[in-house]
Length: 142
Image (cartoon, rainbow, N blue to C red; front, side, top):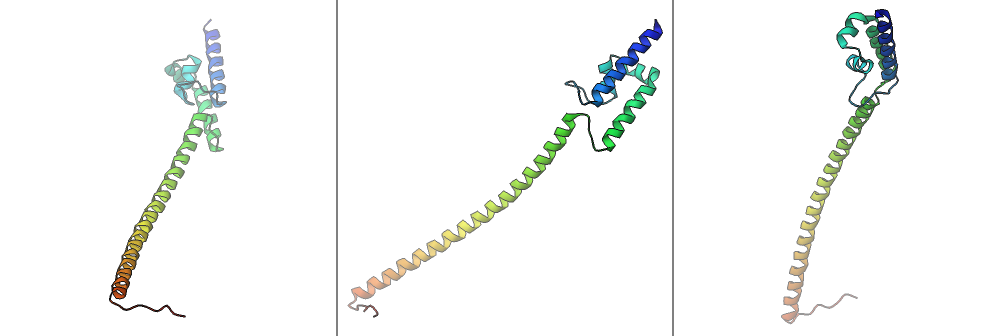
């Protein structure tokens, strides 16, 4: 009877190992020893003491998957992708903020120049008005 329980536990551990390494990771679990023991319904202490060869096999297979650039947990892949997206978006925000600052500086300079030109035009019109009021008339060039 004990050997039957041992075989059943080993079968559950192997099934859980295949499930985790295959990327079918239930909500709230990860691809690690703790999740392996939870999913197989074998206490972690028992996994360490009675099935160290299965624990080692799981760790080796997980290491090989990660060495080849893979990741069995799709959430970790998604998190990494989202972190990269956030970094790119922050870069875009920084560039756009710089462009906005430059545009605001240009706008301020343009408004200042327009105001100065307007004042010059008003001043010239006043001079022209004063000159024509004093009896001098300008003759348009031919």
